[in-house]
Image (cartoon, rainbow, N blue to C red; front, top):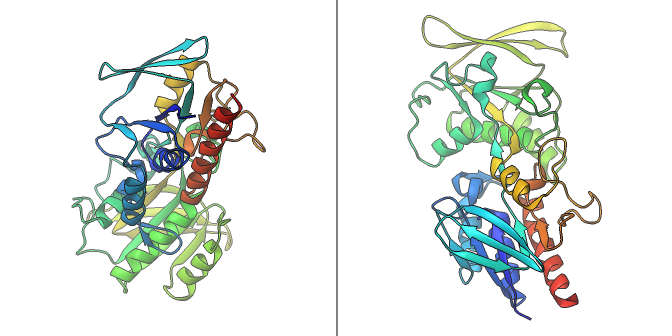
Length: 338
């Protein structure tokens, strides 16, 4: 039986789910508030750990879901609960009636300017991970001076594992992203000295540990265990970073040409807004709460509403794609049962 499924969010989770639902004979509708599909990954340059071009993944997913009905530059204005389904009113005036909603609303990057001690938005040569990826993609950024790349620093866990910032959870991908970006910069600037300031390295994915070893062995990247306490600027416009090396038990001061902050994942405000419309529960970290965290990760407590990707918490790209496939199958089986 062919069913209409409303997919809210056109990132890689929404695209992959739509592709699978098309294969299963259904009629997915992707609702994306941006001007293009792909979400955060569409703005990334290369993916860890094998440095696959992100554009290749987006191209594959775009081709796979092209038969879906896709609304770009469109938001959900209202969701009305019906006796046996939902009416979804869109900002373009169209109303979709469906029994099934798949939430793939993703995440929002932590606003690094909230951590004033790191100087984001204060000093010209402080950027976040997504800014650097945008620069890797060939887009000019006046904060990044390609002619002066002798010393570069990365600060892990910006807005993650930080109760004061309102997010006590690990964002999963910050450590490996810092290593990936450090290697890329080292390949571009072989003589540069690169420092990674971390609390704990959390490298749980396949080949992640190998990537870390490669960064040290082949590229000479320095890993310093300890929090950065202060970032300031000297008279020459260089950054002065003060930290404590907790392994050596002594303070450290480094002069940098560029500082990159590993901004973590936080809940997407759109998820919270939609949750209030449908009466969906949220977790202590404000991400959407699954029916349970072991056997029904892609299911919500509400009939006909499913989840995939980072709307329920930080995810890697492989995890996101796997959840999207799982959610598509869960929806298909529910349709078969009805």
